[in-house]
Length: 108
Image (cartoon, rainbow, N blue to C red; front, side):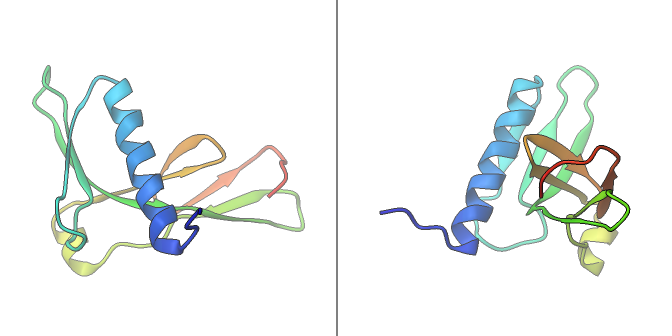
């Protein structure tokens, strides 16, 4: 049986994003709780850079001019204060920010 609930899709997205950062050479630390302002943290052991991430499942729509607009969501006030970064995965790509416009036309 396959559970395609919103929660399950979000869990899978988060794991895929963690896998992406691990493959890029970062250490990745996940939040053990299902709540909180941060889903996972990355550490670049060479530079000491630490980044807090909130992972989202992206949603896309095709505008009349042919542009794909991918919406990721927004940050809460606490997340903004903590300098949390939004990250999402859509169509095999890792995206950063709240809204991304893709110039090439693809099926959405």
